[in-house]
Image (cartoon, rainbow, N blue to C red):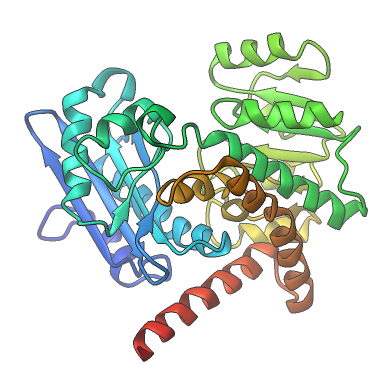
Length: 368
């Protein structure tokens, strides 16, 4: 079933009627000369201009791209709220294979599309886009972050994303085992790309044992070459989640990693990773809790990157950003405490805290 535009009706239902919707604005962008097809979704500007990255991905259908943009934008509202940033949530997706379709002309056209929103949406890097790409986008749009230091930016945000996830793991260890140290713990990481390879370094520096997997053999080889001791690889995620004696599972690739098939076979006692939208559908958070698995909400622990790019708008200072990202440890502990107090899973507790901050901001704006 489709609507009058030809878009699947379930997409419009999500946007206008479901609890997952509530977005302020969704923009469909096309530039035929460059081949650009993109979706920019703004979920909320209650706390300030929407901030979120640009994903470049070969979606099977346009509807799948719209749905992903909606989900990711909503997640950014919650992430930015929990990170204490004065930004709402937005996200953009470019439809295509970045290896084949990404061109300077396409990125410039995309920059013009973002600029047309007049600052309601501030973009950055995500899956399939990099610092060099943001440098190109910034030539057409001043509301661009994640640029290179040579072009006035903060550079690679994956450094602080990984640091924040590491802080979330330490908080999880403190809550579950009474000690934040990960020394001697076995941590499984699915995806050792931009964020995952930095996370491996933090864990090995502390003395954790790390098990990795990635769909790209070169990414796995890079990690094994850099860490000849204390790191092993398994064939795929299916094998990783079944590793005996796994203490922590870190999904660091695409979303939906926690679902009806993976949760029942997870051997880990903690889930704490960098991927966005790890819970495949509502109810998975309860399934984790019922199995006694502690879940550190993804949008809380992976906020180091957005903390970094938000700071870029005000004159980037790495030490200031790292200090802010260090607070992810305390924020994660506070969520676990709220979850215990309210008798709800940590994901629900984080949602309540974020929603209250956004509601307070809307009320304050309405009162002015």
